[in-house]
Image (cartoon, rainbow, N blue to C red):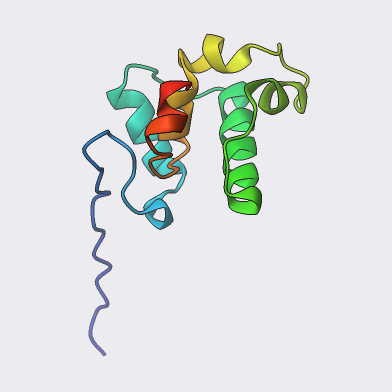
Length: 107
């Protein structure tokens, strides 16, 4: 029997830096984006927000309100800004698709 090789395709990003195919996302991809964007190691608080954002998007197809992403984990209502600098950055690290021009304008 031959050896099965697993070929890993590096994640592709669109022109605005969002993951082109959210199915390529996993925790390693999130860590990679965070490192490249100068965040270093992601904390438990980071992961709580990231996973809340992904769950909300996959269930509702929309942005989660910042205060909801924070309060649902007993974090400061402005935690996204303090943890990620912006909702846009959190969205990128969470591996979610480009939300469109209107949504980006208030992220």
